Structure formats: structure tokens, C-alpha cells
Image 1 (cartoon, rainbow, N blue to C red):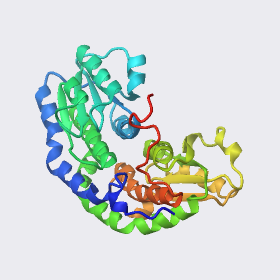
Image 2 (image 1 turned 90 degrees about the horizontal axis):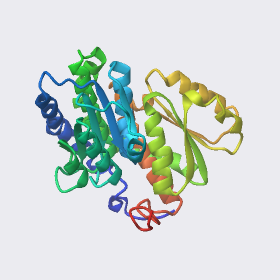
Image 3 (image 1 turned 90 degrees about the vertical axis):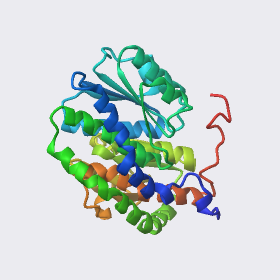
Image 4 (image 1 turned 180 degrees about the vertical axis):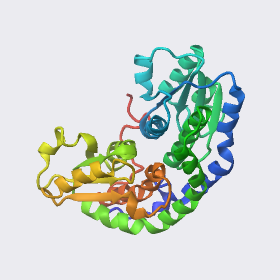
Length: 342
């Protein structure tokens, strides 16, 4: 096991997470309100398109699911080059295109925003810094969050955007309930940060010997399942893996279940819970190599739309300690970030 000071690891964002969420909720989201106020009553958003890559794309997909569940406004989330290579038809003045990039210099996100703006769409850049980057310069509006816990911050900003769209179309009681729970989130994050490292580390010891892991999630945890089971696990732990949708598990993936094949399940509290639980019940009959991260066990008491944010805390610790258990510093890179031309 790699023995290093985890406070020096950039991968780990738990120390600042709650404070950053609190600051964003108390003042940062006013940027979103200002954007919608600037549109006036004669320019209602009738379509939403998110563009991002990697973890930010997963946050966008999570927000798109919220909009689809509680509104009739069409919404899609594209990876940057997908948007550019097969640009959706009908982008116009009633389309909101949101580009999300932590660095603000993701080439395909900046180009997507520029193309959408040229087509007359309302364009919003979501970045760490309001100026000095390509994404911010490409958009008409900017939401700058100024923090490191990007999963939490991106989810909250994207949620705020889709909630504003839903409000402009008459609102929804579930959105009102979610909005009422948002101020409680920072304190929940503080509790989870304090409580979840030890149990997550214990689970990680089981996963250290595994060279490949299937990650299965359902409902609003599907994007988080990809973020953790592919992006985080491959990039930061150098462990092979694949992410599966629980609702599709019986349609092919169940055929490879056997003793010695490891699975991680993300179990939410939304309507998909029974679907994921059915997968768990099947898999645990055939293999012992199963770990379950259950949002219900966190006892958040908050709206189910916040499960992807709450469950991120134990997962952050889990992948940190799995990586260290494999004698790998999650900050190490071989290719990423321009180390090798791509």
C-alpha cells in the first residue's frame, strides 16, 4: 500500500467540498438567476442542450434527467465532439446551450458554444473562472463557481439552470421540495466527510485485488456510475472497468456473472431502486465479489435528486484508498493532460 499524506493529493476534494457548496448556494447561484432575468418575459427557453466532457458531462446528464422527469422541455446532453460532429437541428433563439468545463479550455466545449451562439442560441459557460479561458469567452453568459469539488458544484449549477427552466414553464412541486432541501446540503456533506472515510476504506481493501470491475447503477445514479466506474476508476486508479445501466442488466450483461467477477452497485432512493436491487439479488447468488453503495444508508433526509451528490462522498474515499492500496498515487498520469500527444 502506498503510504502518503492524503491531504497533499489533488484528487481528494472532501476538505473544501461543504464550504464550496455552501458558498455557491448562498451567493454563486445568483449568477443563474441573473441570466434568466436578463432574458425577459418574451424569450422563454423551449429547449436545453448541455455540452461537456468527462465528469462535467455526467453532471450535465444528471441535470438533464431532472429536467426530463419534471418538465416537458426537451433536453439533451452531448459530449463536445458529438455536438460538433452531429450538431442537433433546430438550435435557435429559444434554445439554451450550456457548456461546462472546469478549466474553461476544453477545445470542443468552447467550439460548441461558439457554434450555438452563432446559431442564435442563449449560451452559458459554466467554469471555475469567469475570465481568461476559451469557454467563458465563447459564451454570452458565464457562471463561475470558483471551487475544486467539481462534481458537487457542477451538479448544483446544472440543477439550478434546469430548475429555472422548469419554473419558467409553471414549476413543479418536486422542484419546490428540492429547492427547500438545498440549504441543508452543506451540513450533510460535512457529516458525510467526517463519517464515510473509514467504511469506504474498509470496502476498498476488498477491491484492491480486483483488476477489472463492473459498476452498475440505475435511475439518477447512472451518470455517477459512469463517472466513478469508468472515468475515476480508469483515470485515477488505473483499474479496468465498465459501467452498466441496471435497467439493461438482464439484457446481456447477466450472462457473464460468475464467481470471481467483481461488481460495484450504486443503489439510489428514487424510483429505480427496485430495478437495481433486482440486479443485486441476482448477482449475489452467483458471486461473492460484490460491493454496494446504498444512498439510503447515508440517511440524508433530503430529496432523492441529491443522492448523486451525497453518494459521491463515500465513493471519493473509496477510489482514493483503492488506488493507494494498489500502490498508485491517483494524481499520477502517463498520458493525460498533454503528456503524450492525442
